[in-house]
Length: 98
Image (cartoon, rainbow, N blue to C red; front, side, top):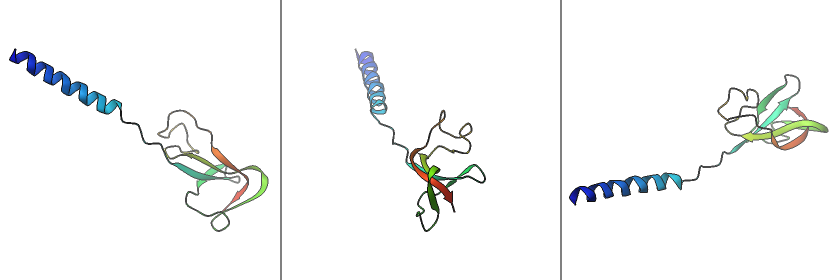
């Protein structure tokens, strides 16, 4: 009988721990803002910078800035930590200059 109590306590501990991990929701990734430098074809991170003071977007065509999840490197999506390929969101039109 004592052996059964020990096994039941161990099983309750394992189930409780598993339920605790199963109920944790992952934190959402914060987005970073990137400007597309047309002369190099590379994105430049502008997170926290101010449009008009740190960079400009002129015109209404093409992509000036876009947001990507923080674990995405838009210049090397095959080698970054994010699985797969991600398209930019909150795209601001214009021609980027810094």
